[in-house]
Image (cartoon, rainbow, N blue to C red; front, side, top):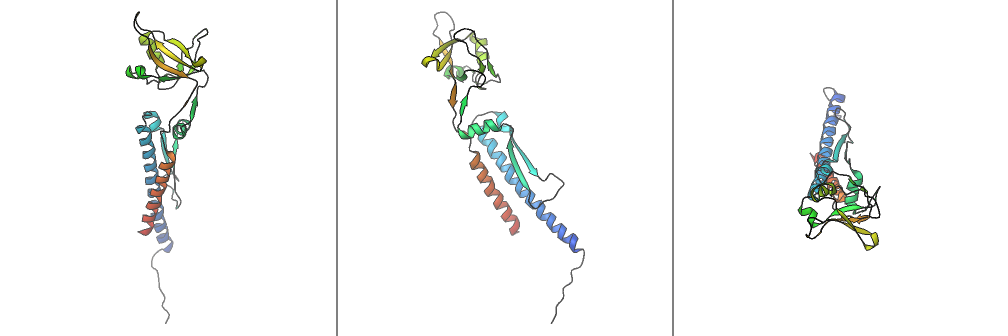
Length: 213
């Protein structure tokens, strides 16, 4: 016995409709995983106290762009501050660039609120105790000098390190505010690889659930 089946309607349109549904589901699964990754990376930056700028520097794109269909969509989570994110991910050594010193706030500077700044340079000095160049974003030397007057440069360890000291009123003890070093080993504050693996697992689950429906 020969059984012949007949499909009514436009087969090509039916297949295209099904493919479009799959493409939409794949894009949604990809976007969800990418959004999770972006949120995780931003949360890491926020928890590390690295500032809103570095938090918002994690950006997200999904390909193809809206309006196009694809069975192989891609999510891209990328950084507008890649070098900084990589440095905090790897615990890299930070070296003073364009100058001699990095300024690290000491407890007295932190207590006075002088550990946060958008200033980018330490004012230059003349003579044997001269200094200048880039300063750490989290050290507000300019504000310290505005409050305490000109800070005194005190060399340490054969000029390998130094202090910036506020002398204050006559007879009052000097207060060390900033430690100056030519380079510093940063702590690993981010784990970008772990966040990426978690997002990949989430994407695999999303796609598996989509196919199983």
